[in-house]
Image 1 (cartoon, rainbow, N blue to C red):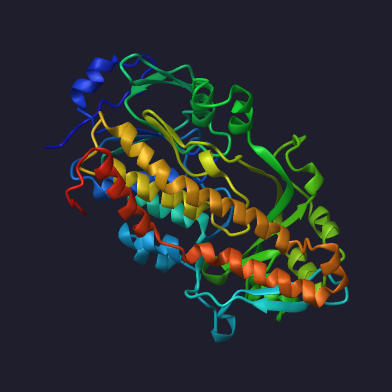
Image 2 (image 1 turned 30 degrees about the vertical axis):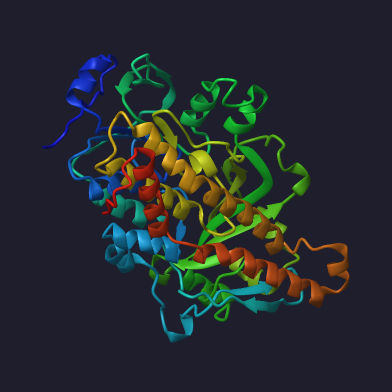
Length: 463
């Protein structure tokens, strides 16, 4: 038997009893990413649609007039590929992933190179991964998710959530910037680093749940002191200028990798002032900049980097903000996923992948036949228990990796550069070990076991 939920789009929502009468516990409202991309929210909707044994109606709200992608490229690591296979999307993604232009362009291994040497840099070391990750344009991934949304999912645009209120019955009133309201039973916030859901969640917690003096620390994004310059470079343009440029072949930091099936190079260049970490950033977080500004910063780098940056098109500057470590991701019938609860530095290229892991575990919990409205809080708690420790570990390791990429060495290591580089290399290789720890399927099996235990049904049910 299919369950239904009343889709509320008017300024005046029906009362809670009407919703609960139509929906005996199997409907979810999803507030989508507010500042572009929306990969976590889309992945959650697709996961619920894939694994639910009956239709669960999902209303996905987007603050803009379309779901688009911010940023050009995205790396699909092995963990993310496992999720794509489980969702039946792997072949579609493979068709739009970057493929080598010729045998000489095969990126056999990521290569790390020291480039802050004006007269010419040198290769540092090669990282030999178990499986070579693929890369694709972020918009292609968004489009694939949109094309695979379940028929039970409704999209609503130009809906920016400002806050929500809890009712005595347990339902939630959603308030939008256009003064409309809606009522729901369960709210999932995938609304990014500026998350209104996160802000309301922590501001509504009692003193026994969180120290009031720490609320701003949890709700406000924190500037890392890093400015990230993003651009894309036509591969043909760089090839004409510098045919042997390393960016045509491999990954490096200044990070560059091929997307759009080898026709574009995604470039991410960062500059960090550690003393500014945690201070307010003055000005626009994202802004267009001149080619000259980007090239000026890297004027003391080798010609390889300079030639790459000469070819950049429409560069932009991003003040890199993260979400401080949160003590919880869920409370009662509200949960956070993706950047809303763990926006991290980009040094592992793991932000989108970790959002999809959140979505996979949470989506399967919400779709599980044991999950009802009465025990949704328990299901959300299981999601938190499984995902919070791991994803916060990844975020910490990513921040540490960024310092290593910047050659932030001790004074002793700087005196003996070769020895310092060897120490840096070993640290970097160790920090990448998280990628092979457990797996999304392992996380899901642990989550299912915990769900069964939490509702007293450790009876061997499995999917």
